[in-house]
Each structure stands twice: as structure tokens, then as C-alpha cells.
Amino acid sequence: KMERAGPMGDMASPLKHFTNAKKKINNIFSDIASYIEEFGEFIDDVGNSDENLIIDEELEDEILAALNQVGGIKDMISRNHMKVVFFGRTSNGKSSVINAMLWDKILPSGIGHTTNCFLSVAGSDEENPGSEQADDGAYLLCGQSNERRSIKSVSQLGHALSQESLSYDSLIQVFWPKKKCALLKDEVVLLDSPGIDVSNDLDQWIDNYCLDADVFILVANAESTLMLAEKNFFHKVNEKLSKPNIFILNNRWDASASEPETMEEVRQQHLERGIAFLADELKVVSKQQAKDRVFFVSAKETLQSRINKLQGKADSTSNMADGYKARLMEFAHFEREFEECISRSATRTKFEYHAQRASKIIDTLYSRAEWLHNRATDLLKDCVERQMFLQQRVEYIDKQLSIITADAKQNITLLSNEAERQVRTAMTD
Ligand code: GDP
Image (cartoon, rainbow, N blue to C red; front, side, top):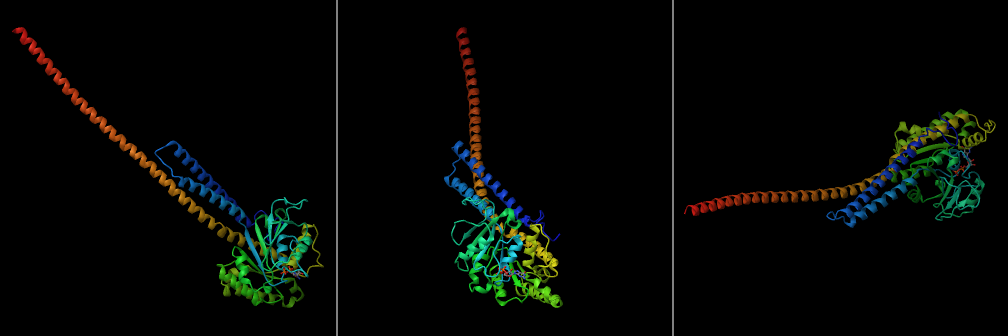
């Protein structure tokens, strides 16, 4: 089944691998925290009840520190998400692709608007606590400021963005209600970039925004070939990240409908070039795998059709170019491949660092527990040795006593015999 059930997706979404793994790892860390707490309580008990077993304060501090670290890791895990970044030249349709994936016109796109800074879209759970009116929890954070600005509509967002005079490499974060969109609910964060053509500072972009990206999507224009600027950017990404996951969307494929006679040929040419770029130039996937990384779509049609669907309207064929159904299917196919890729990659990479840190904390505590165990065993051994020593003493004294007693008895007998003999002698005299 290619088409997702709707803006809320379906139950079997591959994104669930990541969200389930996140839940599991979070539970594991809760367990670790409660074991450490128990260890702490045990140490307190021992320290209070046995004056021979002296627990140094350092151990208590270490346990507190371990608890704090585990708390910190849990916090970081709760903030872990899957991140996809969109690149391409201005007007290739990055904002439109993001909107189509979100089933809603969230980012402003089109003539008169260009994304002139980085723009992220992430899910929000809550109603905006600071706002006076209910706004479903949609709000903006601009640049370094922590001030939440509520947004109620796309036009308002467009307006808010045009008011901002931010530099190309600054970030506006859009928070959109999770309940409106499956991708956001399953913790995907989407990042739109200014066109590759507007900046020379691509290294800075990569350092600031891409090092934790799980997937890169190059939104290319199917009406032209890949530009050198686009290729160079991904060469740079490839230098900084090991085997980045890259998808190529040949957008505006609806334009091909107007030239049906050359359509297949053009598609084949773009496909071959895309595969050669990913497999031969960047060497991030094999040629076979690269076939599932290059797609021909129309973000504009997909978005329109999805909005129609949500409003219960049928697609009006007069607005759609020939073959739009196949392009819708291809968009859904792309999304499926993308979801599998991002979920697999994020599950593999995002938790590894936390697991390593946790295993260090556990190792330290284990060695402390081992020390405590050895110390207790030593004390027990001391006790046993002392007991054996005392027992030998007792046995020795016992023996001595019985020798003395036997001696005394013998002497008494001798003495009494002697006395008797003397009495008898006196009587006979
Ligand atoms: P961005 O600058 O890369 O974010 O591009 P936008 O998403 O703002 O799109 C620029 C213009 O191209 C807008 O007018 C879109 O409606 C139009 N556009 C985007 N995707 C498509 C598409 O698949 N087909 C056609 N025909 N137009 C598109």
C-alpha cells in the first residue's frame, strides 16, 4: 500500500521503529536510575549500621553524580528526534515538498517568497501556555530569542517571516501541533534551507545544521540538470559525514506532461545521472540502492491533492496535468523509502552515544560495588579468623584445665592415701 492513510499516516509506519526504540531505551534508563538509587540506599544502610565498614564520602558523591548523569541522558533522549534537511536551489520547491509531506500549507512558498534563512518545523504537544488565545500550540522561535510568538495561520507565518531581517545562517523554528501531522507526531524534524545558490558559506551551514541530520533531500528541478553548486554542496557534506543518506527528488515532474514524446528519455537521463552522482561520485550507496533514492515527483500536485482529500473534495482533473496519479504514487513511494531510511539510521546512530556513556557509568558503579563486596568479605574473613583463634584458645585452656584437674585429683588421692597411711601407722604405734 503506497498511499498513506492521511495526514496522520498509518499504524505500520516505519517511523515507529525509532519512536519505539526511544521508549524502550528511556525505560532502560529509568531502570538504571532506580538501581542506582537502591545502591545509594544500601550504602546508607551499611554506613549507618556497621562501624567496621567505613564508607568514604567519595562513594556517596559518585552515586549522586551517576544519578545526575543518568537523569541528564534521559533528558537528552527525550529530546532526540529524526532530522531531515532539504537543500536545493531557490524555487526548486523545497517548501512545497515539506508542505506536501506535512499534508498542509505550513511553510509559505511561491512567488514573492523565498526562504532566506533556515526554517525548521517540529511538533509541539501543548497549547501555548503564554498565549492569551487558544492557538493549538503553533508558535515560532526566532534566532537566539526564547520568546514564543504564536501563529494562527500560514499567511501570518509568511508575514512574520518577511518581517524578520535575519542572516542566511540564522534559524527560525516553527512548532506545529503534533496532532495535525503524523511526521511531526513521530518526531521527525524538517529543516528547510535558503537556496544553495545564495551562500558561499556552505561549510558553516553544514557545521551548524547538518552534523546531526539523518537524511538529506536534494530537491532538484526536473526541468534542468543537477547544478554544480548542488553537487559541490553534497561533496562537502560527504567529507564531513560518513555515508550521509541522500535522496534526490526531481521536482516539477508535472512539467514533463507537456512534452510526452521526450518524457521517458528525459526521465532515464535524470535517473542515470542521479544514480551516477550517488553511487559513482559520492560513493554513498551502490548503484542498485541508488535506484531507490531518485524520484520524479510534483510537490505542487501532491500538496493540492492532499489538501483536497482532507477537505473531502475530489481532485479536479482540469487543474492536474496528465499522469498526475502516477506522480502522486511516486511521491508516496518516496515517503515510504524515506521513512524507512531515516528511522533505521536514527535508531542506529542517535542512541549509541548515550548507551556508551551509560555503560561507563555502570562500569564505575560496578567496580565500587565490587570494592564494597571485597571489603565485606575481608571483614568476614577477619571475623572467622578471630573466631578460630579464640576457639583454639578455649580448647587449649580446656585441655590445660583438664590436665590440672587430673593432676590435682591425683595429688589429692596421693595426699589422702598418705594421710590414711600416717593415721594407720599412728594407731598401730
Ligand atoms: P523553494 O524556494 O525551493 O522553497 O520553492 P517553493 O516551494 O517556494 O516553490 C517555488 C515555486 O514553485 C512556487 O510557486 C511553487 O508553487 C512552485 N512549485 C513547487 N513545486 C512545484 C511542482 O512540483 N510543479 C510545479 N509546476 N510548480 C511547483
